[in-house]
Image (cartoon, rainbow, N blue to C red):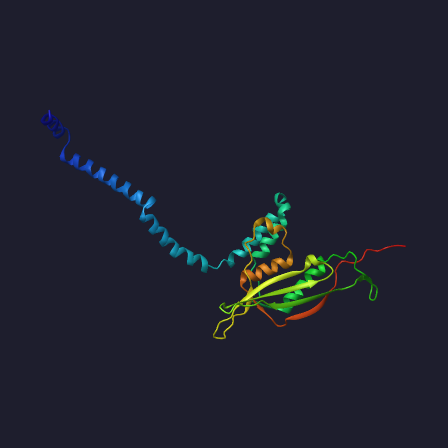
Length: 247
């Protein structure tokens, strides 16, 4: 029986046909082996590592500034669309947060002025006295700026400090801003920068105010905070005008 089967196989298939079948099966086996290696094996990991080595530095160094105009146009269209009117504040704040600040450093007194300017728009005028010296307006509110260093452990090269902007009339406007700098044993010191804030969630963009956006933009840009004064007092002049009363 064995000899008969062998004879039938020899009669049915030529040597060329057998060779062709063997080549096809070998090619299929090789293809399956390569596919498995690239999908699950070390080859896949090696390719992923090489892609990361090349692509990550490229993305980090790529200049996306040329896309800002397009981003501005798209966000403007979205902000004005009926479907997004409820989320307009989120879109506007996202656009503001993604805009790189022009200054790479800012004096503490300048930051204090920015806070005062924001307070003048937002301050609660309830229970404020009215001044009649030069027209009719709310009386100014006294405020102050303080810079205070925190104790630094002897083993640490990090000097931390806190900036405080404060007024006694509307406490919800008061802020504490953590900053830090590297201070080396050699005597070399880096400028103060804003301590990294926690990640901003999309849902929180709705509630960010003008001054918070400024702080976040400066922190994201790693802007230097120049301590030109450690204390300063000033006054907040409310923009809101008193309502007319008739006796």
